[in-house]
Image (cartoon, rainbow, N blue to C red; front, side, top):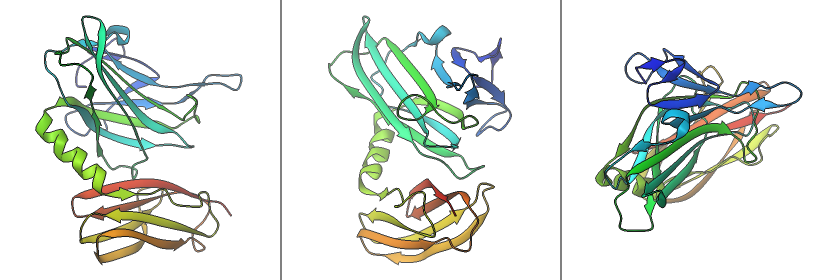
Length: 251
């Protein structure tokens, strides 16, 4: 997203988007933020490829679309990415994925696997990204920053896809909570596991786990009685697996 024209990245179109210097690589990235639409309404940001989101020409059966993002929701929003592959104006493949919050100021990779229904080679791709919750609305101020988006080859996505199937970090329960909640995760093999909690400024407030763990399902309890009300993030690192989720303390 280095080149911009009339408020849009070249070859892209959007609603409620902004050029920002907070980039993963290069000088610029795209910020998508939910805005106040007035009269109890909001404007949900959309970033789509092509003029007015009509798509872009392609000539390969890409297996994956991905990039890097930062995401700071104020409510239950997700960073959503949808990809549709076309051949002669007919849909022959698609992919959709939702991504959770990241630690503030931390870039995280995202990937969407594309599944095909025919053997045809696509000639056009439709790509759209937004920030919203399940019913298409959201809380004003929630935003995502996106950079370095690209299609990937089959080899690289196969490795990422396999990893995502084997490791998992679950949403804490209950959420919101006061003062305790449970955090669970799964490991396919023995790994050194680090689980940490961060505040909205990206500052670490506590390390919940830092030790070797056997393969299987694990659960730990977090007591937030010493913390003030607000939004926090818990992050796991287990081998090459990293994930972050948001939790809310209400007192």
